[in-house]
Image 1 (tube, rainbow, N blue to C red):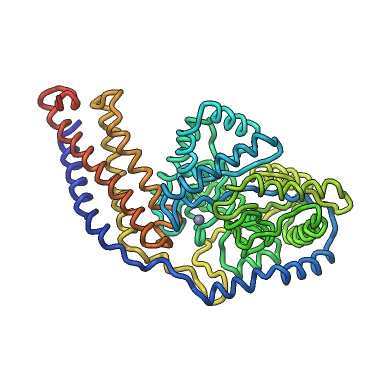
Image 2: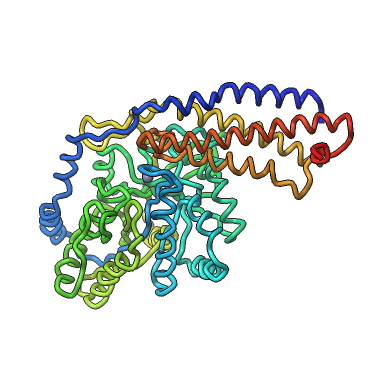
Length: 498
Ligand SMILES: [Zn+2]
């Protein structure tokens, strides 16, 4: 290795450490990014009045073509790595219970499925799981009951995250999945981002994804797409070579349900907005009637006889038995009443895509294409989601500084390895890189770098990232010094410490 390179690394580390000014960042967390709009909440409340919604569904749904429809129920839990609470708080209070309870339900019934996207929590849970639990999980994966979608450490933001950070976040989760379960995700899943970019989808195609399930576009565009049956389409990011490059995209029928259940069909106290009336023998006919009316209308806006629908909400399925139990009642009732000409099945994006691929071939169905971004967005008139582009500037800057350090530190690490300057059992440097990678993933979560968390949680993002930056700088300086010393003494870096 050349001495010039070490000088260059040293210079970069000094610049990054000065730029990061960690202590200053932590003490200056402005309360700018989190707000609530009373007026907006009132508008949403109007949208969610059950009785009015079901009256419309009932009136409109029964006028429609009564063709046979298969409804794909997609159980999932949107587990923000942090939002109103930090990562540790969410893991202890919610995520680990959800994972325990969901795995138990899937194991009891082989027809049940679950789509899981956030590896930051799953990796932590997996590392704490017993050998027998891991065997069960492997079986559920083989049986295609537990499906990994997205598969990043978290669901990073589209608009603010730098492309290198997106790659770090995704690689972080994918490397874990490949190593532990030999799984390589092929389905994109950024369901809570505040708009979407074609740049992110270009990266997805380079990661081997063939499809992407997302939710938020401008409300007027959603409305137009619904009327033209264009909620499913191909998004075609341009390539340098001009080669065809496209991803299948799915948008949910009910715009305001984003990645949620149909209104009234979310079954978990305190987690659903709004919570649905439980289904039992006393009301199953009426409740399934509402379900059928809703999906008749949904089906009329798609080109296929199969309809995909998210069945989950933020941190749902902690009461997995209750949630699945209610959905079981719908599935059974439809099975026992073939005259309704509708079936519901537990499904995953992969299973749904198998069905529609078949229909595309058999019925020669074509999908439209798009080459534009879906940013900025508005969800109701005069309500653009743009504040997050510029809020929490200290947090955004720290994310950029952490990224710069990561690129230099990884290059330095590679050179140490290539030149056999790291002992094979030396994990100190690799541990520091992993901590920094986790922190970069964490700070690029769609409620982190966007600034949509309350100040206490913003402080947590910054504290975790600052600590990882500090650790990486210390280790880098240490190895830099030892490696330079070694070039004159010819001893291994570690032996110089003894
Ligand atoms: Zn979210």
